[in-house]
Image (cartoon, rainbow, N blue to C red; front, side):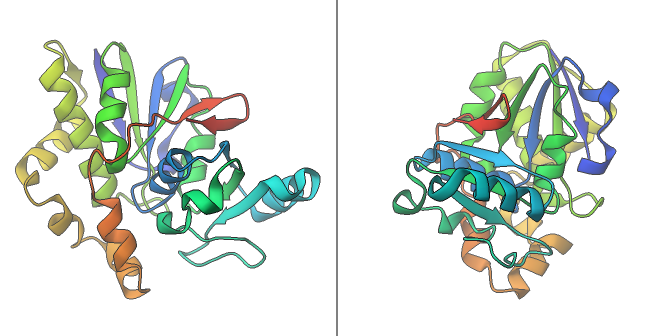
Length: 236
């Protein structure tokens, strides 16, 4: 097994992901929303790059579609919900298609579409993702980052996935960056939330009043769902 890590959505190239098993991570908060919505009964999540695309899908699809996402961590005007995973409760999402656009996570997904397989990960479904990956050979973990910058929370999640895979797989080759990400996680595995709380993106969200989201997103192994790209959408 070979594992590479990419630091941000903007750094993803076709060559890095083509015909590989790719896992997109955006802990705060896009992939945490996707995992939560699908776990709570959403039919699918459709990631798009712009609000205009989302509005077009809503117009053509009708009431079964919910619009969710953010720009600069704020609700997009005209959208049903923002980027808080706590908004996507079973009574809201069951049987619905969630069309999402976010600053970083949906870009990371679209930049990874040449993958052989594309999965969505967060701390919430970390062990389910690891079980899905344990027989794969060529894995790329894509950290979405924040506006082209590395983020601690995505790196720690990638490091945790690598750490858990190494517990199950005796022959893993890691790129230099993957080795550093693994070392970051293993140095702080007893207090990952406190370490992430020092990061810029975390503190932007805290200052905007999203502490409940932050507490929720750092829970591990609370969902057994493995969201996967299928056709033009993500399904659980």
